[in-house]
Amino acid sequence: MRKCLTAAAAGLLACYFAFCFVFAADGALRGDVDQNGRVNTSDARSILRHAVSLDSLPEEMVTFADVDSDGSLKTADARLALRMAVGLEELFTMDEVYHAHAYVELERTDETCTADGQRLLRCQVCGKEKTEVLPARHIYQDATCTTPRTCTRCGATTGSALGHTTGLGICGNCGQEILDLMDEMDAVLSQYNSAVEYIDMAYGALAYGDLAQARSYYNQAGAAYAAAAECCGSYWEFQTIKPLLTQLSSTIYSMSQSMGLSQAHVDAFNGYVDQYVALIESFQTEVINRWGDYYYFEE
Image (cartoon, rainbow, N blue to C red; front, top):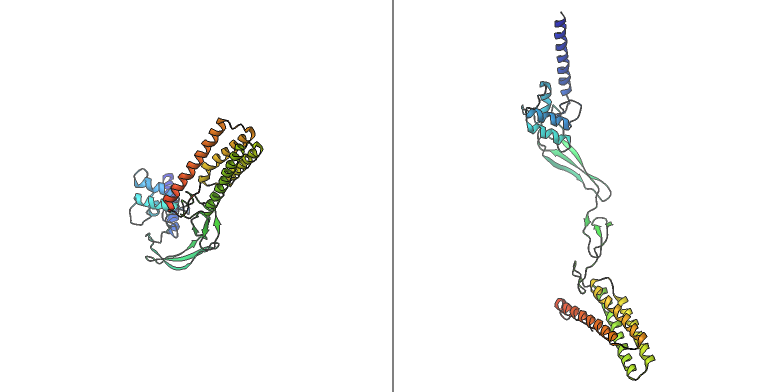
């Protein structure tokens, strides 16, 4: 009698589970092996282990595991279940036959910079429709030398302009002539030429033995060299000239203080002048190579 009751109970229990799975199949998801209402990675793992004979799913679960509904359980079903679990594949209920949707766009409202848009899609195979959100976004144009990244729709900007990179007045990014560099270079040369004139006058004063006047001219020359250094901007061309102009200013002030015109002072001064002139000549050669005679530096 006890064995009969046990067998009957087991039969009832089997019927109960079978009923539950049949009932759950109504609206249940393909791939939802454990019937918890969602397809997750554990479902995909269970399907895969069954497909490669590492486990054996109960018969009632095999129906849910057959994601592509082709009557057999294989690794492709596990892959589909995994893609469903991570949102790369759409979910299907048991009363739907799995197929790859082929959506076409029916209606569209484009997004703007500040408001979402949307589009209505319909599957050409089964007629299923879905609405896809088009997130609001700016459409940025790349930054240029003078402007940051700029939205082509609303004009909003982000980041900073690239800034010009020059090579003797020509931007390496956009090829534009950099006028402020040329203006600064003209100012540098003007101050430098003024310093040369003061030095010539100082030599003349020394020839007549007028030390006070010579010292005054030397000081003015030093001030002109210092002013030329101050005119140097941030472009790379100035980075080689500015230190020389500073050294010329410092040396000429030393000569003014000592008025001894030692050979060391004279040699140092002439050395800096030679370097400066050599740089200006190299710049002039480079400019002629790039621009012809359009622009030139005066020594």
